[in-house]
Length: 485
Image (cartoon, rainbow, N blue to C red; front, side):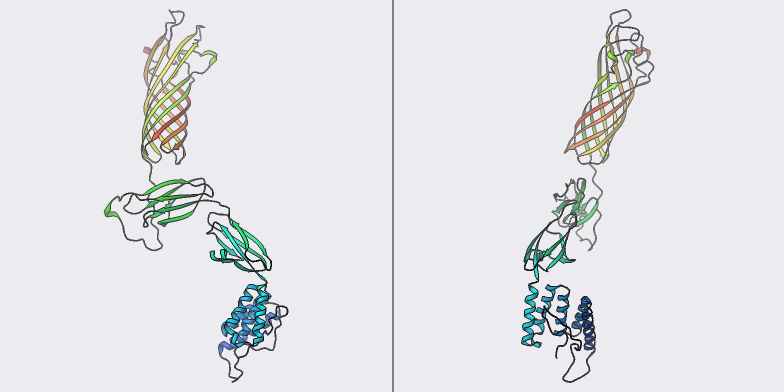
């Protein structure tokens, strides 16, 4: 076997002979070539033509095809020359090393020396880079080719010139960088630090057969590491048939990592424990979210204004009477967003210097009320802050006392009290600190006064709230409390 084709590997000058024959012609017997040889010859000759036309990538494909059909030093030699023409110096040097390793016996001493010299010259046109990427598990590509973690740390050989590095990781913004490598630059350090766009969760289940679900989607068994939207609550569930589910809510800041180690509760039903492994590639559906249930108590302090004038008395300077309020509540939360509570509330105001329409005599009066009844409370979802609203009804007892005036005949004063129905409405926000609750709300009480206005409760022949079937108290309240859930 003789080699034909590209005979000169000098990097200073390379030529292609047009009268060459393809690899594999038996010159000794002159026998007809087999189909592989014929096909190799076709690819080889076409490669020569494409090389002469300057189509180096096309010529490379043809010489590689010729070598695949009939391996020989000529085709491999021409592959290296095309790679050099395409500025792929590292690949050309590797091809020449392959040439020496597989076909050295078919080459003369001068040819082997020429190949060694070419390898030295090509190696001088190759540099290397060492990439430090953060996070360490990011996927890195160099000029579109994936790079392994070992390559990144030990160094990647690259041809001189410009190269594009791209790093990608879930939860981080994609980073692309173009760098220039000159001859002789070895292990050039490159830093790739990706900017986070998410937060990160590391969930480990103590039971290796337990499934892990995040935000209602089952992600893995035993361990899961992934990204989640930052600054919002995320539901983490670890579950297995027959066991009490572990459940928690976490909030992850941008770029931060939250570790969750979960241990299942005791078996709910020993006979219900399923030891059968799930089918490959399937994920069990997570259980419904566990809704918090339990008792709670609240103490509220506030103030409410009274627009109606008791006994038509006008406060000094026309100020609206403001009642101080205090209430205590005990409730139970049977569902996630609904609670039922009982309220006992008191309100009181004392006014000095009030005057009647036809009298300049200053008078003093005290108005007290006690409310008792049930409320329905709405609770929006939220781990640290939520919106709340209540509506309720019950009975209210009003008590009005008027001090005696200067004219003891007509301004004799007196007191009266009566029981009427009421309706209440509240809307506000609540902060949660573990089991401790704190919040603020706007309040509206609509108190019936029909019984209060009856003749038997008149003071100085006047109804407490003449001409009104109900009075409204509007104000603000601040509450603190404790929840047993």
